[in-house]
Every structure is written in C-alpha cells, then in structure tokens.
Amino acid sequence: MTEAAPRAQRHIALILARDLAANLAAAILLVDAEGNLVFFNEPAERILGRPYAEAQMSSAELAKTFKPVDEYGEPIPLQDLPLSQAFRSGIPSHGHLRIEAVDGRTRDLEVVAVPLRVEGDELVGGLAMFWERAGEA
Amino acid sequence: MRARFWGSRGSLATPGPDTVRYGGNTSCVEVRPDDGSLVILDSGTGIRALGAQLDGTAPKRIDILLSHLHLDHLEGLGFFAPLWDPGTELHIWGPPSPTRSLSDRISQYLSPPLFPVRLQEVPARLQLHDAPHEPWMLGSATITARSIIHRGPTVGYRIEDAGRSLAYLTDHEPALAVDLSTVAPEWVSGFDVAAGADVLIHDCQYTEAEYPDRAGFGHSSTKHVADFARLAGAHRLLLFHHDPNHDDDELETLCERVRELWDGGEVDLAREGEEIDFS
Image (cartoon, rainbow over all chains, first blue to last red; front, side, top):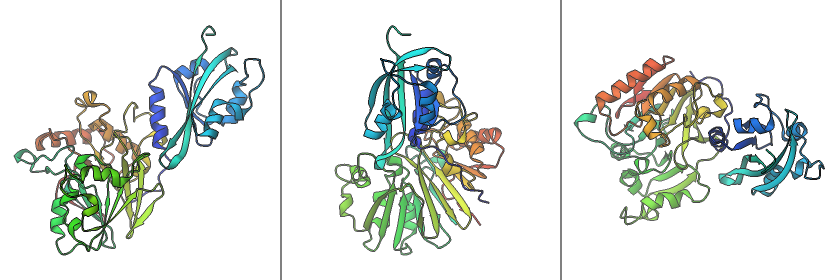
C-alpha cells in the first residue's frame, strides 16, 4: 500500500552543497531560499564559537546572534550583509565584517556569499564561505 | 498498473551466456497505468524489443521518461519502431539543464556521424519536455520527477496510479560523501521520490568492496541501496543497473548481501522480461 505523502526533501543543489561543505576545511554556512540557516560545517563552528544547532535560525536571527559590524564598529544592516546582497543581486557578493562569536570573542572576517540558483533561474538557497582575516586569528 | 523490464543492465549492453538469467540489455522499463496508456522509463537497448512487440498495437501517444542522457539510457531510441511511424505522437521527458535544451542534448547522439538520421527528421511527431518540478498526469498516472545525485542532470521518477506507487532511481549515488544511516531524510537525494513506494527500482551496481574505487561515479553499492531502502520505507526493492562485469551468479550473491543488510521488505534482482503487477 502507498503510505502518506513523502516528507519534504531539500533541493538537490542544497544537498550537494551540504555534502561538499561537510567535507571541506573551509568554513561554510548554508541558508535556504527564505534565508533560514540550515547548516554550517565544523570549521564554521570553530569561527562562530558554537556547534551547529539543530534548531532552524532565520537570517535575521543569525544577524542578531552574531551582531555583525563594519571596520568602524557600526552595525551592518541585515540587507547589507553579503548573503542578502547575493540573494538580491543574483550574483556572488564579498564583504568584510566583524562578528561577536558565541564564545565571546570578536572575529574579523572575510565573507564570500553565493546564491544557489538552479535551472529555471530558481533560487534554492545560498552559501557563505568565510575566514578570519590575516593577523586577526 | 503493471510494469515490465526490457533492460536492467547498466553502462553497456552485455549479451552472452553469463547474463541470460537477468539479461544484457540496458535500461528500459515499460509501465502501463490502469487506463492502458504507455509510459516508458528510459530508452536503453531494451526499448528495441519493446517497440517490436508493440507492432500494430502501439497507442497513438507514447511517453518516454528519460532519467538522464548517458548513452546506456538513450542508445535504443533510434531503434524504437514507433519513432518511425508518422502516426505516433511521441513525448520525451528528461532532466532540465541550466544551459541546453533537451532537444539539443538528445540531438548530439541522434545526428551524424553517430546516427544516420537527425532527430528533427524522424517521422513520429515528437514533443520534448523538460521534466517539470510539479507533478503532472500521464493517462491515469501521476508522475513526479526530482533531481538526484549522479553525474550530470539526472532525475528520479515516481509513478502513482490507483493508490500504488513505483519509484525509479537508476544511476543514483545518494551515499556520496554522507552516511545514509545517520543523515536526516530531508538531506538524502531521492528521498521524496522513494518514500513509502510499493516498488523501488534502484541502482545497485557495486559490491561494498568495489565501491571505494568507484566513489563519485554516480552509482550505489549493496550497503547504500539497503540503507536507502530502509530510510525510504520501501515495500519491495528491485536491484537495477547491473554492472556489465557481474555475471548472473555474481548478481545473485550481491542480491543475497542486500537481503542480509535490509529485511524491511522483499528484495530481488530486476530481470529482463519480468513483469510486476501492482494489483
């Protein structure tokens, strides 16, 4: 007998991105098409200062948690963060920012954000690769 | 709904005395929803015999669902008799590509010098479609296509008719870089297509010993397919896309291994000529 309707599965592009991130030494986080945090890898855990939480987190909550500021210490609005810019423009975006990690340390980061677009120009999510700037580690 | 295997071999047609029990033709499965319409999964070399059997009885409309365009899933198309009948309305569905149309990609094979006739010149009335993201109807059946992990654009198909379901995931490597026994279903390629299926037709090309040297080739091992069937909650598992290097005896050993690893349902080897009745 056929059972209940299948549970929702992530788009294959997100699944592949997650598998790739899980096997890389670079820090990567993934968001879905709505900007909700869906994964970050172990190198990202080291920079963000916390293990990946099972609970979903929206991009707004993400910004609130890590309090990104620019080099002058001014808060960076959510819409100006690299992932927001990448979502809006449809092309990769790059930026510098400082975050207050959950372990209490401030970290100076470079971020490259890439929108994950698939056939039909559908946006299924995005990924951000980030690393600590030289001399700040 | 009924289904029949016309080809269950992977990669390369493998005729000969060592493959007579399970067959040597490459991927092709005939599906007959309850309304009698004809849906064909892939056009490997097995589709030639299907076309010959249809002689004079072919429905006006035929739908071929291509999982992907690797040659072992496409090479029989030019030898499918209804293609040469101007009375045939042939709809071909396949995985979307971000860059090239389905027609362009199929024409790469169905054109000189690889084939003497161009796709645009065949007598049948052809309509080519990118498999849509939303489910669609073919006859009385509902078809769902989802992108899955393999090399190049590839989809798995789920066919539902009269409360029964068939999932077709040939050429699939869901365990690439992940452990299927620990990952959540939402992160598993093909899960939506296979969840709770009455019959799951799934790639089982390699033994566990063979897989490490072939990781990333786009295929599954015995352990992967057992893990995937468990996760999907399939009721019957038919092992498909048999490796050309495996003879009938080796295939049966491989099947026994999957039975050891998964006892959640019936496990068999897909056998050319075998018919599945869903009633």
